[in-house]
Image (cartoon, rainbow, N blue to C red; front, top):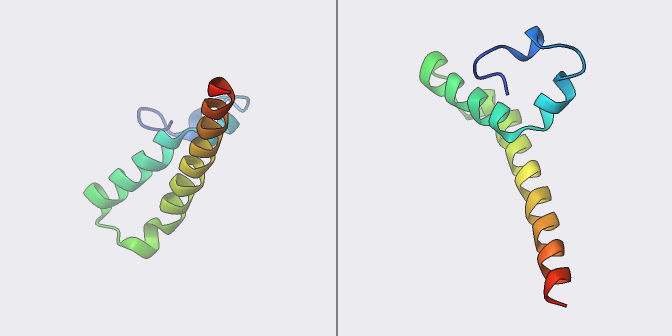
Length: 70
């Protein structure tokens, strides 16, 4: 997720998995706010990525839950 080691230092086969991990974007936001003092426009991409991943996971979870009840 890039919390302990940077994503650029990971093996090439592991990087796509890191970019799908929501923890990577949350860590980017935390690092930006706590260490760099970034504001919302600087962190907009990470917030959008978290919103997209969260929406996708919610949609998948809802679909699976409905199928299980039927």
